[in-house]
Image (cartoon, rainbow, N blue to C red; front, side, top):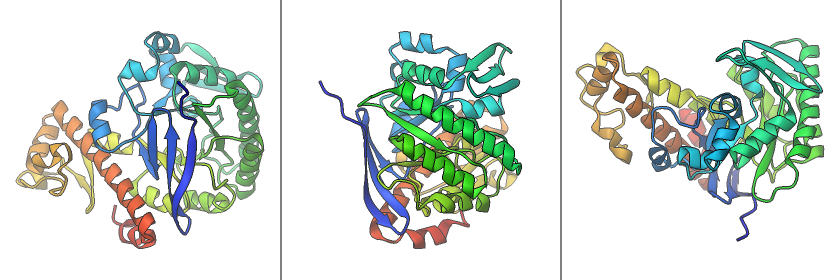
Length: 370
């Protein structure tokens, strides 16, 4: 049987915002899309079937964490990541570059060798080259792979960012060669360059010359302001190929997503909905709710009375407040699922308004509210 080739088409546009459809052999993904983060081969505190019921059509998992535990060979022996975690959805794996920068106890970048680092778990030394990152992602059998890149910490030092961008471009070329020809899977390039317009343009142009199935914007969500992030997107929004999906990595809040969609972004991932759910913060159409607050102790209304999905409206704020303040595990499970469901409702509404030509009005209504 011939498997479907990865494919992307733009279906509708409203100024720069756009609706599209990614086709993979595991299923289709409507864009703009939000990918729940399954770092350790699980979306924390949820069952994968419930994630699917929220309308999620793709999830993200993490190369860095899975190479450390349980290891790619163990996952390969189970039949790949999908079988290992019982997931029928397409899976995107990131390359591990960001985690090397943010988590490892020691890291050093060598242009030829790759990233040399010590595990944040036990201090064991690893070398992650572009070729090794691709080998691991192929071993995981993910559907969308990311090139190996260097993601430096936020800095205004132009020389540091330029050197990092040059290394990322070189590693992107090596990643593409290691990926080879594959009709079922996709490989995305990652645009780097910090907050410098000329470096962002140069990075993108070099990636386009290499040729990728999609283009991600990396090196953001590392401490810059929202306006700084939007300025980066404004710089390159006219330059990214129209016929390829555009992925803003590690972003973000609902207002981040609205602003990025307005600038032509198609794909997002972030730990915010799940991490917030585990700490008692709920996202709703009327803004954020800290369910631990004592004012909710006698509020018998649900977080969202209109949400009938997964019976989430059967749990009152009063009850959720009690669960969190007694450290019950169910609290994290309910609020995590609520937040992911809200994010998918947001994406559905975004797509609907783009198709109607009313996205700017929708954006203006909620950009400062969510």
